[in-house]
Image 1 (cartoon, rainbow, N blue to C red):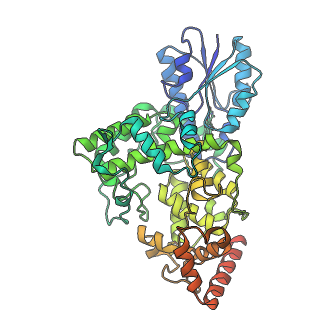
Image 2 (image 1 turned 120 degrees about the horizontal axis):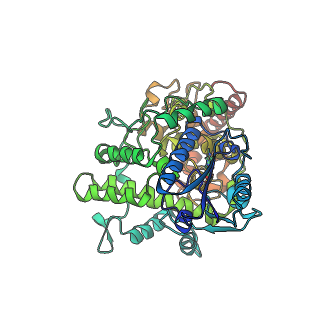
Image 3 (image 1 turned 90 degrees about the vertical axis):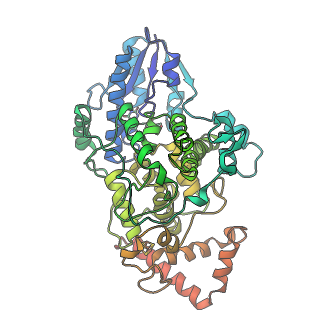
Length: 507
Ligand code: DLZ
Ligand code: SF4
């Protein structure tokens, strides 16, 4: 007999390791272990979500007829690591070896590679692109742009394709996804699930062990099994999708979800299937229930961005997460952990992250990531923060998004220019500035929006690298037209602001 490892983000009955194994003789190993619950200080909601979903999946497997050796966090025999548990169970069952599906993190891939047991690692085929497909696409290209990879995935899946051509004549309707914040919402947000007995037990354990981590455990309302996740998705599909396209990039005060599907966490642990959700979104469009910009925008996130991020993570290898091409060294400001700040956009984004373990892509990229980049925060610190605080964050998807896309620390593998903006972008896409103590219109002075100061400071600091970038030439010409006095004032106020930020003042 062999052991069949199932990790906390591999909760899919179609998992390659389960397909390959023999239900009659093999034993599934699942383990709640301290190594995984604490490699970063995960948000308590994230830990509770994963442990509860693992317990329910183990029950599902048993019902299907599998033997499951499940280690709970409080088991006195728990060795604290995935490899430790495999060695312990291999001994207990006199197993001939271990079958597993490749994990989504180099740290675990390397640990499993080094196991003193006979192992058989299988590809994770819950994704649309294989590693080899991505490598073939990437090899020999000067730039690895998501858009071209996305087109390959559209062709491969046939999603939103008519006779080999993109539906509507265009591949990408991103320009129709940028309406600013709406006045009112027509969708009540994600479906919330009352904790059942399994979830309640997990909540008690998580409160005891991880109650001090950043983030609110209660109220806990995530779906924790396949049927709940499916119900959640169906509600959004019928009520949220039709508005999703227009307002994908908008941000509203005290509104954490707007028209977002909030399914990243469910897809990433295996409770929802990426291709199946895309097919249902396409069906809604074909039936006339959703506009093309909504369906295409959604499908692009899943088969475009998501697959492309995974491709980059595996193509670039384990050293990618340590990259720091801009040489940034500032410690992550305490405001990211809930410290006081007068910047309303940041205060709102951090507060909802604390409450929900969720923020949408523009809050992550253009508020939280943008500020860290402008301020010159060490990429590994902001990377570990993102990995810790979002329920959907696993390294294969989080690291390329943060190290590459958001922080430009990979020197431009993912982004053709850094995602930086002044307060103007946030003002256009949200209503945060209305109730902020800073004034978004002010470029200098005591009330000037810090994003305005830091924006020019960043461009000035990195002018050698970016002034020649064809996509940034115009903005450098604006900077050069400022008088020397004005430039000096902006730089001195920015330095002052950063000094107060470093001193832990509530800026
Ligand atoms: C994220 C996570 C957490 C918090 N806890 C566990 C756990 O106790 N047991 C487990 O098998 N997996 C857990 N995970 C998910 C793993 O960290 C994840 O499989 C790897 O990071 C690879 O993506
Ligand atoms: Fe954020 Fe500046 Fe707007 Fe305040 S004024 S909310 S700091 S962008």
